[in-house]
Amino acid sequence: MATIPAIMINVESQVLWLAAAAAAAVAASLVSFGIARQRYGGWRIWLGSLWALTAGLALAAGSGHAVVLLILAELLLLQWPVACLIAVRRFHARLPLPGSERTDRSVAGLAALVLLGGAAWASDSGPFALAPAAASLAVHLYAASVLFCGPAGHDGARLRLLGGTLALSAIGPVLWALPAWEAVPTLALRGVATVLAAVVTAFIVVGLICDRTERQLRDSRRRLRVLANIDSLTNVPNRRHFHELASRTLAADPPGSAALVIFDVDHFKQVNDNLGHAAGDRALRLVARCVQDVLRANDVPGRHGGDEFVLLLRRATTSEAMAVANRIVGQVQRQAQGHDLPSISLSFGIVHLYRGEGLDDALRRADQALYEAKRQGRSRAVAATGRDGRPVFTESERLGLTAA
Image (cartoon, rainbow, N blue to C red; front, side):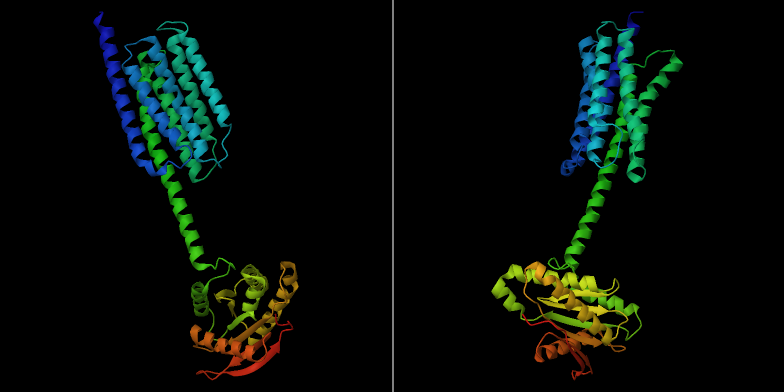
């Protein structure tokens, strides 16, 4: 009869060694997966808790049922669900979860006191047998309940799956022990359940990390597209992106329905030379803001280079484009003094696109109209018709700004 407990102890030890080996394999896999992901909040806590779980299982397997070693092993196992919860809080710092990290640590500390209080009885049965299982059940269910109360959505679904895993790892051993008429699940049974939960948790953690990485990649690509398409000084489309937007717009609208405007800042070099390049940058930002204030949402602005801007006005005539030019210069004149700038004058070249005319051809005609506005004394808007490089300047209007 004396050999039966020895056999049972040996089997339990072997089960715990296998559980420790499985936990070590999971932890090692996450280490190799997370070498480049250690910047994520909570990642080190996840890994640390897994290695502590591995150490606890190994300590329990090799304890020979020494009370002190078993107590230390139980404490190492007890930290795992709370550490997972704290890691989630740090990984998803913006998600509203009940409680706080301080509350989590308090619950873990209280459970540890319960475990140590049971150990004070110095008996392998009774309170000491019950205390570790009760403490483990409490911390698992606490962590699971917090995770179940997470927000809705994709991230919340993963957290609820993690909470369900923690709950099953706590309740499963109890349900397994009941048919055998055991009041308390053994350490080996709880260790196996914990390792199985750790494996599932590892997959969930990897999924969370991959989701975070994918979102960051999407954000990075979006930022790169913005940097590639938007002029950083004026926050309007750069030359290349303007051509893309304008081409798509012309293809979608009825032929011959748009007006094209090119304008620049008169004597811009003098602004830079006399007031400095910082003042020149302020002037360009001011002009760009005024353009965005005046244009409709479906019009297309762009910085064509240097101090030159270009506008595609959808479903507009040259007369309407002249009115837009007047509103732009009015805005610039009203706001220039508040930006420590002299009176800025602008010159405009305006054309109405013909049916079948390409954007480049229209830009050349508008550029010729702009040069004509310069020739006529600047601070003017000139409209041009005509094709084949022979423009006809049909309308010229002084815009009321004094040249800088």
